[in-house]
Each structure stands twice: as C-alpha cells, then as structure tokens.
Length: 115
Length: 112
Image (cartoon, rainbow over all chains, first blue to last red; front, side):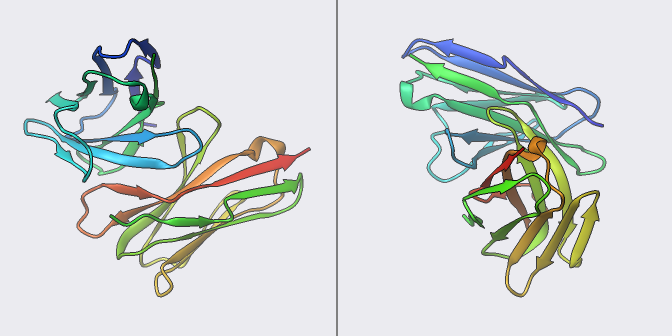
C-alpha cells in the first residue's frame, strides 16, 4: 500500500526555538496534505490543509504565523513550529491525498516535546 | 467545525467477547472511516463506508451507517488482546475536500 513518512519521529527542543517536521509521500504524488495535532488521550484535530504550490489553509484558531506550512513539491510538505513553547508539545500527524485516486494515507506521526 | 462524538469513551472486555463502539456526527458526509491507534503510534485505517452504504464487513469488523441518525457503529467480533487500542471514526464532509473530522475516540481494552 501507499506509504507516507514523517521525519523526525521524535524531537525534543528548547522553548523559543523552531522545529521543522517533514511529511513525504513515498510512492505517490499528493497535491493536498493535511496536518493534525493530537494531545495526550485526545483525538486528532485538523490544523491545516497544505496545498502544493499555494498557501496553506488553516483551521479556525490555528495561528498561521506560528505553524508555517510549505508544500514545495508533490511529495513533500513541511510544518515548522516557530518559537515553540511547552504547550506546543504534542503528537503531530500528517496525511497525504493521492492525486490520482484521492485515497488518503497517514504518516506515523512526530512526537514533539518542548522543554 | 463538526466534531464527532463516540461512545463509550472507554470499554473493557474479555478476550472472545464482542466490542461495539458508536460514533455520531453533525453534518452531511461523503463517507465515514474507522481508524485504530495503538498507544503513541500512528493511525491504522480499518474500513471506509460511503454515505450510500448501510453496512460493510471486513474480517472480524462490521460497520453500519445510519445517515438519517448521523451515526455509525463499529463491531469487533471475537476480540483478541491485540485489539487493545483506541478507535476513532472520521468523517469526510461533502465537498470532497479530503478534510477528515475525527470523533473523540473509544479506548478499548481486551483482557486476555
């Protein structure tokens, strides 16, 4: 089946620094990718829709200047958490929508811990 | 935005028993999907049911969809300890945007 990878799988950073998370579709092309956040013992919340070649669309309440999304190619979207704070510590999961089939595939997630 | 609700929030059963989880949603949908998530891990896609379908089976899984009540259920038959996980429903709203709205999830514990 189709594979989506995320890198890194885990990252620990200091408060005030920025962290970049990559989401790659390995064997298909995706014009649309989605970024979700999941706090412990909670469900996934959609943060933004990443569109190849254009600006991301953010959900209500998500700060676009804090969570920078770049979808530079048909196989890669990046999420940069800028000036991270401990409350940004969470599990970040991406999904990628196959350009041809519209099937959606999830990445394995990235655990971010801000100290 | 719509946010599905699932019940029960937590379910504990013995191996071999059946587990039923319910999901309700608020707006029109194209399809509804069920996912499993083991603790601290990514999502595993279980089954997708389209809005014009009422029931779907996959192995030990049975999913029903009632669009008039805006609800779905996931039944796992003959449960195993390995089924212990959190289960989420997710709806893909009308408009074919691909955006998924997840329910709150049910944490299932299957005791050996």
